[in-house]
Image (cartoon, rainbow, N blue to C red; front, side, top):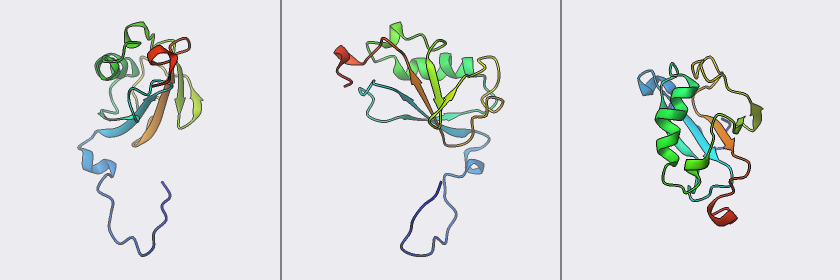
Length: 119
């Protein structure tokens, strides 16, 4: 990630992947579901499968939203760093090309947030 500073940046960032004991950060946002004010910052194992990410991490994370029961995350449109992305649900996150601090978004057509208000 590029940064602009007013002076020398003389220290190593603390959020480097090697500081997460084999895990990595993954940001995940659900388009038009602004009950969640920002993407989730998730600590994940790069060895877990994409299906495990959905079932063990994402479903519990979005469970409070009224649309969550109807959300078919396996048929969602996915975006990785703003580019269309087709996950291999059986492959690991690393094998899917997900790196530390990547941004993953999902879109569930027909589910438009609370009362369609995007809020």
